[in-house]
Length: 391
Image 1: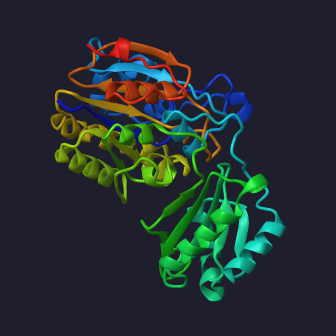
Image 2: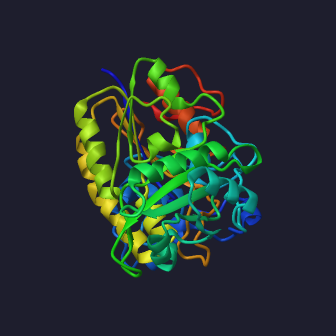
């Protein structure tokens, strides 16, 4: 029977600070640990039954006596703590130098050149929360037609515009121009279109028409190996943007976490062989960056409640893998990503339940294992744990 892997990335659901977290100002970060401690009576029974509480002690998530899944955690080998770096490493690509960040905003010489290219002045050029800056500068943007430019502690150049002032089509052209310009010393991981709507300050809201323009992965990625094997790669959410479309045979846009689950279920029902890869971005975008501990905990509960639907559609040769790409501890004062281990849970009829996969030295071990399971050529990086995992 054809093999299939369902890989669900819970964006930012870290499980404790890495040894080098102090280099990033992230000592003491523990996304899952703090959420489970502060979310009273947290209810994630299916993740608990998989063995989540066996990876690390988590308040309210007791270690399963007979875990249904194999479990472990992974350290990030690459430098950095952003979405691009984490996802690339899962796909077998290391970054030895972190992507550029601009905590003081982008150089004025670049901003001036960018304004000349797009034919508009810009507002902002600062480190800011995306939801906050559109309330603060949105009215001036509507009045002037100047797009709002901002960044964060991540390697991003974000451009916000009201869809009735700058059309979505034009905003995407502006972002494409920025992507072409942000090269060399100014190379950032992603240029992100952040369209919004609303009648006035205080009522502006971001729409679901976000689009990411990522830099090209610097090496061959897992997804390309899978397609070369003659299998399908189905991308849910921002996966296509993260990998710049490379090695993807079909993709679908999402509006929120539960929409991502719905569309993952749709792909499962198609019975294609290969990889279904989904990113559930609300954990990071809606809750982590806004330091919303309770909302984050509720989102975990909502995902957990959908796990039986996913499990019911798994076939005999399917593997369900749940992991993350970095942390974003909503309990710490910082609103930025945190340098953390990520959890690893693997469930399926062919996987040995209760196997402790240990602490993997890189996310690439997961990619290498998926490659071996699907019968592709080996990745450049990563050590497969299939020998320990499979029955």
